[in-house]
Length: 79
Image (cartoon, rainbow, N blue to C red; front, side):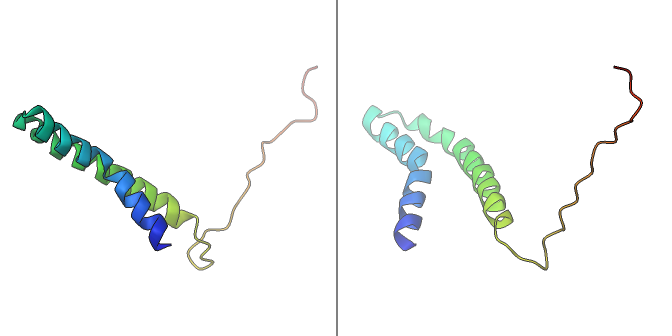
């Protein structure tokens, strides 16, 4: 589990590493100003992935019962 977590965290931080490498290699320090936009996108992604993961955990006390609302059909519909 620790290995998967480490691999995922490095994968998710790849855009930050790429911006840092671009700033260093291109010698254009203004690119670092894009970092807040990437942080915002990262947080949105983190929240959505966390929400999807937590929704998959089977917790009987917090899970609502599945209710299937069938579509009503009439027996005398035109053919």
